[in-house]
Image 1 (tube, rainbow, N blue to C red):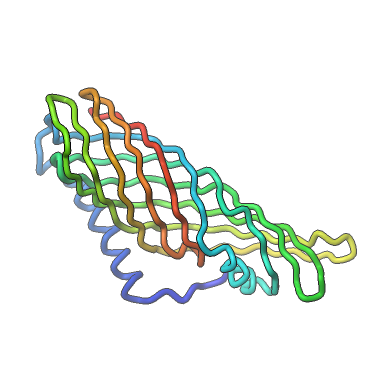
Image 2: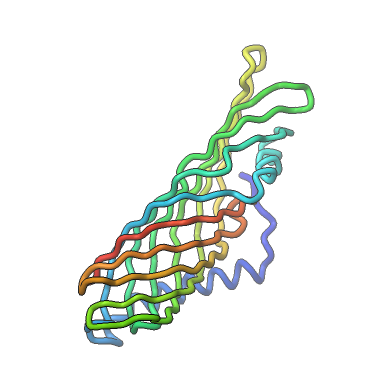
Length: 221
């Protein structure tokens, strides 16, 4: 298993944010009565992500004993499922599951051997969401928001030789906790329904930085 060298203070901060968000989310019903702005919600999101530093996949697979120059498809679909508690129109806590699908790539080594591989990652994220309403009526609101927190991810890597004369393959798994942050617009047009469009950045997920754009459908109850 390949272990990343992650700065201790960054990992500790992400872990604290993750645990604090989970604790406060579990304590929400005892602290607030459900109302127009104080309520639970669930949702699902779908979108696309793009990687900044696909060359870092070379370092990822070096830990499996391969020296490759990879060429990856730089974008892929992603989806998420989430639940949260809206404390007020300015503040919410949210936890969810994020899946970035399968990223396919090809590679070659110094001996001109070619390889094909996949890279997958998913995990659990916890976020603090701060919002500023820019339009508000009864059961209707448009807000701009910022979000940030921790992302506990798992990754799988697979690499196989494409040459019939060379039989070589390797697999690897890893996990860690890193930070994520984002911004966007939240539109609540009905008492129980809302949509959210957001940009988010996931930092250093097994050496790869992800930039995501997601459209979320939300239900309040």
